[in-house]
Length: 107
Image (tube, rainbow, N blue to C red; front, side, top):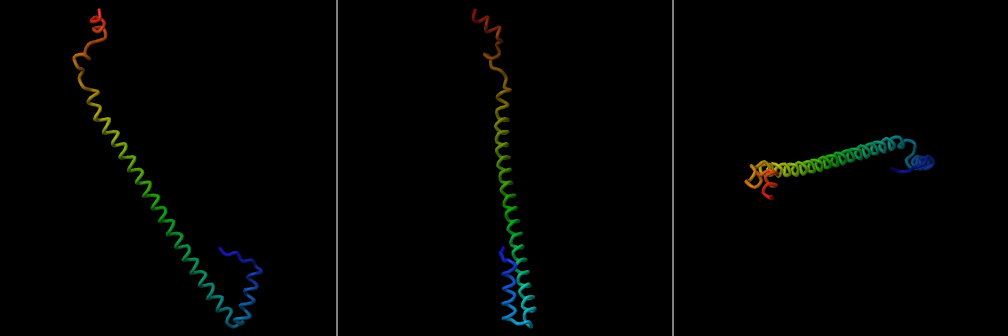
């Protein structure tokens, strides 16, 4: 996240040693470490929460797409079943004639 080189960290440590003194420096370092750990834990918590929210949104989107595909398939099936009785309907008088009958009529 932050790009500190070893030399920059040594300069910060020397300035802290001069400003705080050798008595208060360990306590300040522990306090700074505590806050860094808390900040890191908070960052990971937010990151995990965001990832879970994105995953749940992806799942909802997938579910909506599946429901839409199911509705389309259901509509196609209903259309096919409504056309089936017409295809199976008994032949009419004109349609009952065989091709041979049609040839005889033409003669």
